[in-house]
Image (cartoon, rainbow, N blue to C red; front, side, top):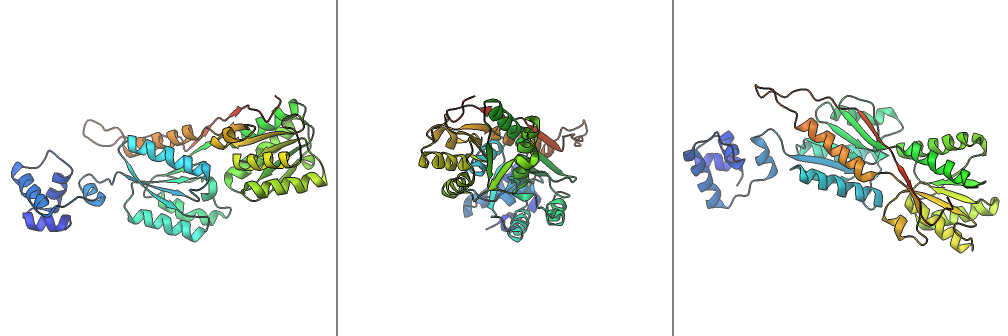
Length: 342
């Protein structure tokens, strides 16, 4: 049985059924009793779509992430869903992977579920080819799109992200000021965030008077073992005394490399990672890490979205315009632990 069957059986309109389901006041007791009798008789449980008919909102947000096994994205999903629940909203999660066509299909799937808005978690949703972002730009014409640590310039798209560039700039300069002479940066992603971090490394080097051609940057795969092997190979080519890693995962790989080569941390080699996740504290020794303030980023994302979806009303009950910044950048913080001397 669905809402249409109830309408027919009770002899009332679909709108009346919807008002009863949603607990609206503008329905007579006679109509309410008719509908509730049918619901009780058939054991009907209203689904999200039925509940949404009466208020023009599904109270549901579509969340997309590329890889929920990634600790950064797993934490982002947790923070987002927790904040949404506090505000009375449900969520539907699509783990899309990295293939563009799958991302598009997931976006269309969420649209078909009548979500009120979209949250794209992670910077992998910013494609290098601008044309490949068109499906998001078009979708934002109908529903708000919030981007967590990504940025696409278009109407209806709002970005809240960490200051990845500033965080990496601080990490580089702190290492240099502590006496580091040969710093290597290891990363695993060419995403929007990844590019911002590289720009931060370059900005830090410039501040320290190091020319761009003398910056050592290497790319590896997103696994502890691969990063450790990559650093071992680079160390054989030319030794370094400090490592900056683009994530705590890569930071763990850096620790594995140092231990396997008998290098004392932080006396012989210093390590700074990024995100300040639980991995940083679980490491032995504990990692100095740039706190990307992910919880704050997700909270600001949800706060902005709630303002868009629940605007203030004028005396006639009409929604008033809401003014929100299209781009919000959250300042990072360098958390110092046992892998650095400063």
